[in-house]
Length: 140
Image 1: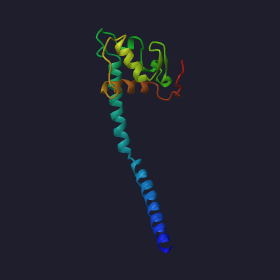
Image 2: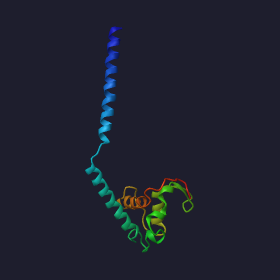
Image 3: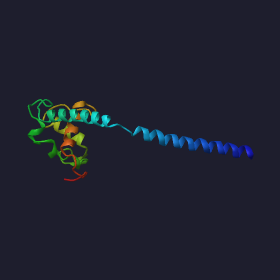
Image 4: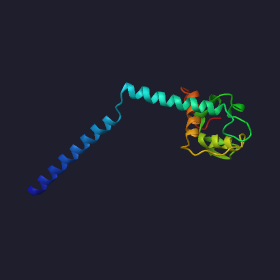
């Protein structure tokens, strides 16, 4: 019985130590410097600018049509309302899927993978244009 209490005590101390270490490590992982934030913002804005360039360019299609011919800027794509039902597709879709629908249909281009730098740039620009607008998934 004495050995069981000793084993239990050792296990309890080990558990407490692992909880403390986990909490400490997770706290450290979330810390960053002002220089980190400035670098990340600069990198993000570089991607946003590329998205803006692509949005106003006919480079993604095969028929000289650009996104801005239907949407003068990224803001009026209303990214805050996705996911939502899209009549053109006949089901609930994400903004990523809607952008690909536009690339295939009005622009007559090829769809982009979610991790394609051009898709990341387009979505970054579109969301940046609507920064500060409350989320309203499903809204029409």
